[in-house]
Image 1 (cartoon, rainbow, N blue to C red):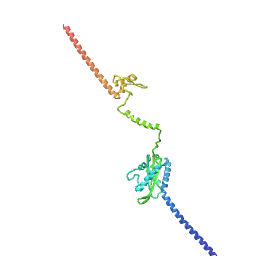
Image 2: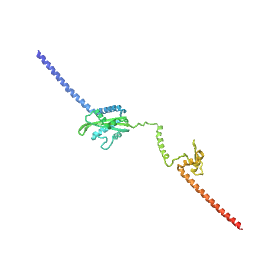
Image 3: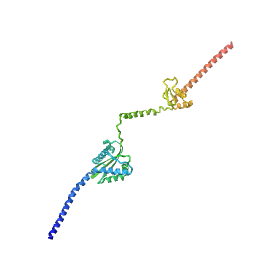
Image 4: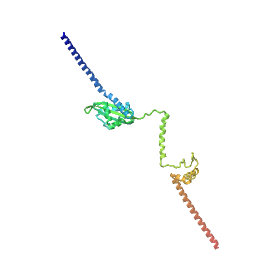
Length: 307
C-alpha cells in the first residue's frame, strides 16, 4: 500500500514538472514574436520619444516647447529614407542638396531651420538624445530658443553590412501665416509700393533745397505756401530772393547766403556778375560821351574867342 502511494506521488511530481516545462516553452514561443514586433515597431515609437526628451531639456534651459508639424515629420522621414536608400550619412545629399531641400520638397515655409542626425547601432532614443547633448554644436541647435516646431524621421536597415537606424531631427521657425485680407485691406500693399518709389527724387543730390519754394514764383510764409499764377519779368532766382526779403524778417545777407547753398547761388552770382559788367560798361560809355561833348564844347568856345 505504501509503495502504491509512493509511486502515485512520484507520478504526480513528474506530471507537474512536465506541465511546467510545456508552459515554459509555450510562453517562450509567444514572447519571441512580441519582442520581434517591438523591435520592428521601433521606428514608430522612437520619434515621439525623441521629441519628448528634446522638449524636456528645452524647458530645463528656458526654451519653448516644440510642436510636432506633419510636414516637418514628412521631410525628416524623407531624409532618413534617402540616406538609407542611397547609403550615405551626411547633412548634404550626394548631389549637394542641403536639409532645406527636403523642406522645400514638402512645401514647408520657414524663417530658419536646423537638423540633427544620428546613426545608431542597437541604441535607444535616450542614447541618441544623450549623444546630441554631449556635442556642443548639436546641443546648441537642439536648445535654440527661436525654434518652435519639430519633426523626426527614422529609417532602419543595412548600412555597410550593419543593421543600423538613421535618425533625423529637424527643428524650425515657421514662416508667419498671412491671413486672407478683405479687398479694402489688400490695397494697402498697392499704396506702399509707390510710396517707396517717390523717395528717390527726394534723396536725389540734384535737388537739396534750403529754403522751401514750391515754384519760382511762390512766396513762402510761416503758415502756408501761396503759389502765384502770374509770370514775373525778373529772373527767377532774383525774384525768389526778393520774395524772401518781402516775407521774412531776416536780413538780406542771411537770405542770400541761405539761397546760395543751392543751385540758385550759381544763378544769383552770374546775375550779379552780368549786372556789374553792364553797369561798368554804361559808366564807361557815359564818361566817353561826356568827354566827347566836353571836347567839342571847348573847341567851339575856342573858335568863338578867336573871332
